[in-house]
Image (cartoon, rainbow, N blue to C red; front, side):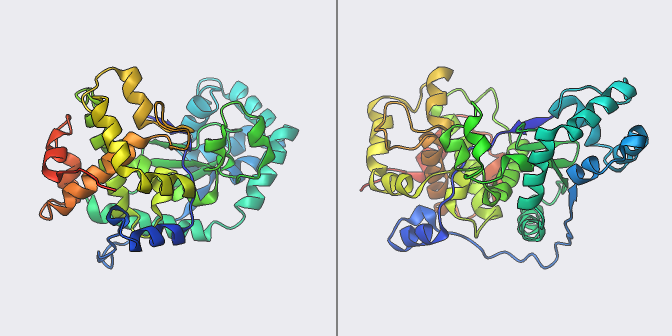
Length: 350
């Protein structure tokens, strides 16, 4: 199974989060106390796009065959699913010609130049991702650590996970000031503001967890989806203990402050409108997907506010259930979310 993810998060300074924590907002607190000393991992980010753009045009097919051999699980995924040009084993001349045209196109060359400037040195990214994957291995010891690959697709998917590969589309993380983003119809402002290097690791880890614990058809209510998304976000608390919550949920400073100030109003909105047990998918999606704001709430409200509330419910549940491990939480098979809500006794007061 292949999953493609577009980035839709937002960056806040860590100082803001620490300030909110100290001021009494308990659901922002972090847990950093795990021993990773026995987790052996030496992560390398493999620069697929660099190898692709360095092929010799006089022996393109031979060079592509070498790259395919070096990236056996990613090369076909890249040509078939990301670029959509087919499998080189089926039509070698055609795919090779298209790839050569792709990497020699002046527009793509300029894009690659921007990517190489922005990601000339990925040492910090490697270190951050390695630490996150060590946490991942600590909490989920039976699961694989993927091979990490960077690629360029001209604004295709930001993250790809398949066949033990974690692919990072670096052309989707060129920063808020990358002017071309604003000419792309799918790059709304709330997407552009999250297209930064700082968002890469949270996206990667979130997607790995979602791949392990996807939403199921049994999750028919809004509360079920809120609890599921809250569990994913709580997992990020453990796997990314020093990462600001803003990078996990994707809010601006003003949106964070608005949510803190209006926590009880948000909950009252769900209760008074009988939304927790809503089962119509077109209504559920309003509250558990990203967007500029949440339908039915004031314009300054952030999108995805149902997931935020689910996160708070799960955090409260876990504070009351200290004997429950992260894996036990994630494997809990209550698709309704009701048990989490009942045990948490979540009822905010501003």
